[in-house]
Length: 168
Image (cartoon, rainbow, N blue to C red):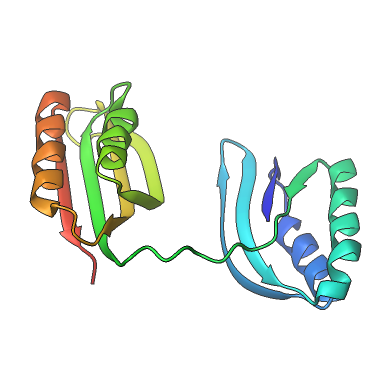
């Protein structure tokens, strides 16, 4: 399920209470506050006979300013194997960094599983620096060196530092 709304204390508790009240089990989640908004994605396990009641209860949260979208889990397709990699990028902020990197990764069939980005002031100059950390799934048989070279060409063009390393 995906949850979005104006941030305020008690949002996670409200959702957790509804899940528990309907016999559900909280399996995994990623949640964050960004720009005064709260957004989260989570997976729960729920007895099938309780699904309709939980969905109705979640719809009731709209009156409290919380938008919830719920979908049944879909079994992952057999991918033939993937390797986990971490990507880190740091450089002066400019439009198009994410677009160029994401486009190159997509061209190689690489899946971006997690992406965290932020802008902040550089320690010495005060310039706005862009930082990104991503967890990638690279398909088995993909030419990792070609991916690395492509990312390095983009990094040189954008004047950013980029690191691609196999995850532990």
